[in-house]
Image 1 (cartoon, rainbow, N blue to C red):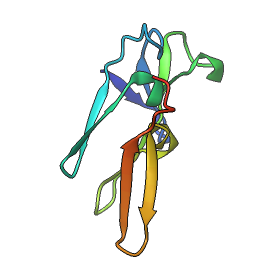
Image 2: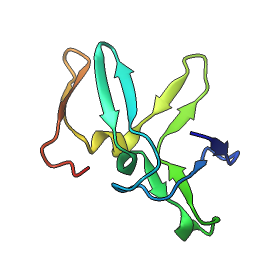
Image 3: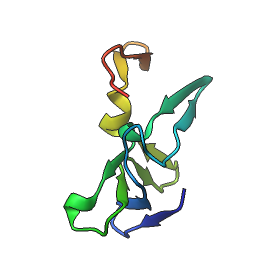
Length: 102
């Protein structure tokens, strides 16, 4: 996937759509020993309404380059999962949501 960083933390790529006919691949994320698969509709948004050229999608995550490089997955990622926040053990549990529409 060819991407263009706009310089203001918004990343664009060429796409036809983000639905079932999307030319974008599913993205697989490995977090600890778990593998999470995100369909394009959960990591990209068709960007024509933002005044950009046609066939452009905006990626819905962000990368923060610090001493501890971080990906910010945010709501698009979390919408796929039921989340349990265990503050006592400093853990987050994720289970696929039965309500997520791919």
